[in-house]
Image (cartoon, rainbow, N blue to C red; front, side, top):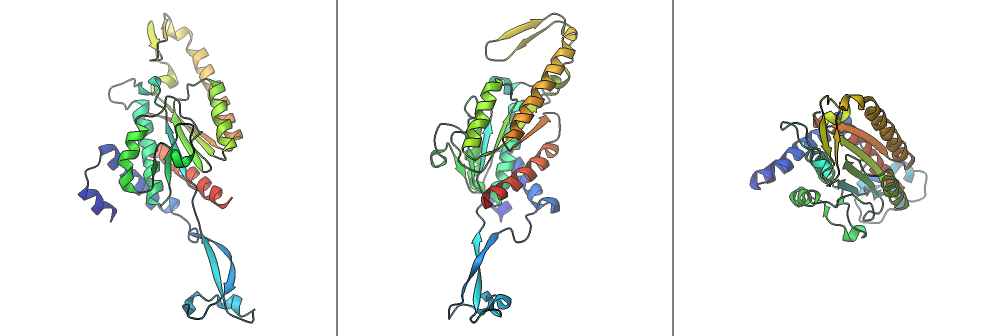
Length: 289
């Protein structure tokens, strides 16, 4: 049914790619939803004349003076909120054959959105100090994905949590924001009972700082720096980067969420599977709460 619909509609290449990855994720044996996850047991009620007898809970009825029916409440999954950082630093790529950090982030976010809507779960986009009913966009069907991509491609400079209430949030960013802003973001999420999942996207050169000759650096927002001897600051740079990552990771976990890193030269699958598992598990836990 899905692929028949796709054949009748021309979709952006990134959407098609996300759907292929999402289909593979949701079809994998180790990611399929467990049986019985569709509804929660609520209680028993008396059987009414005229109802199909297959509804009768025979074992429970045997202990009662009248027949009873087992009632279940549909499991309503909490929404998945998405935020893709649109800061200038996210458009960096060290080689023309690599995707930019923003392109990689879009691919991850859209794939996880596709897997959610295929499972009947709502998806919203973070942005703006509004409630979820006024969020910048909400998707509930595969047909909504192209519009979702458009909204994700034009995000606020720094993803914010003020549009979300309950559920899980995935923020994909290079997380080069000030630590105080990061803490403020997590505080907002905790106050709104949103479980934060932070994915730090990095270009390979940011991980190893392979520069030897004098080099000019820019953050893309007006700050430039020339380093005459990059090799002399490599150790300090890598240590500072590791310490910052450890701090941000600890803050995310204290907020009840997770902190994951990925490189733009890595296959998407290595990032998608652990994120998919974490998001699916926490959305189900949140729905029960």
